[in-house]
Image (cartoon, rainbow, N blue to C red; front, side, top):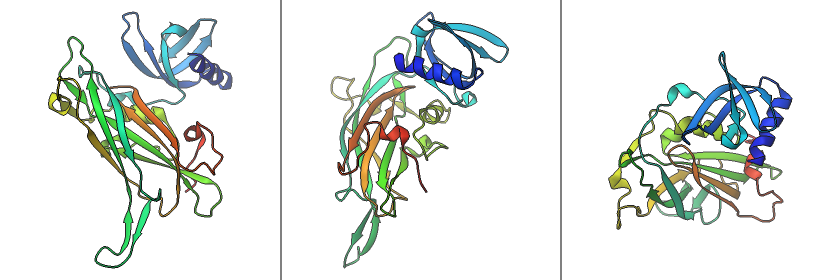
Amino acid sequence: MKKIIILLLFAFAISPAFSGTLIYLNSQKEKKIISEIDIVSIDKKIITIKIGKTTRTLPFSSILKYYDTDINMNLAFDDNTADYTIYATNVKMPINNKGITTRKGGKKAGKQVNKVTLEYTVNMKKQKNQRRAIKAPYFYLYVLVASGNNSGTSLYCFSYPESAKTKNTKTYNEAAMLERVLASERPNYNADFVLHGNGMKGPNRTATFELKGIGNREIIAYHLVAWGKDDIVFTENKILNLRYNISKNWHIHARNQK
């Protein structure tokens, strides 16, 4: 909560009419998402926002997240699919932590684009008035690689499935991810995708990311983000090369230098 308040205060300080996207709980404890808002004022425990010509107030305690960019809410629609969580059981990186493997001799000679394979399970939450179906899990893999000239680093974003791809692939941008998560073309999976054993724990599923574009450069770190119905339900941040002096939140500050 403290981080959200600081971000809102910072946004308001930069511009008294700063636009963005707000996720909050209404009086019925239902999650709501509104975009293209203007922050009118910030008091001790209250934030006043304006949407079009309508002004309303919200208590800070009801705010779940704030993004300082707008998302296209015209792509979104309400649905009654079930909430669920994801747990990554295994992330298989290339053996040499590089984007390309060079093979020698025989029919397989030449270069081959490496892949990252993610194994995961899905746990559906039981709730009344919800279908026995889920929105397709969306995954985003942020990879930090050494720059081609051996000085500095560069960020690459890979997504799974194809429909999860965002317009912004040069920086870490949760608002851009959320826009794709809420898009109407996001596919549904029926209960067969999830059901296994006791009926609520799914077996290992697989997501694959082709490391196109990074060439033979070394992978320094990766940050994996998994989205459930309308929220991030799993993250994994791992530094593979400790020789690089990077912070724990490297993915937030990194840029694509291409």
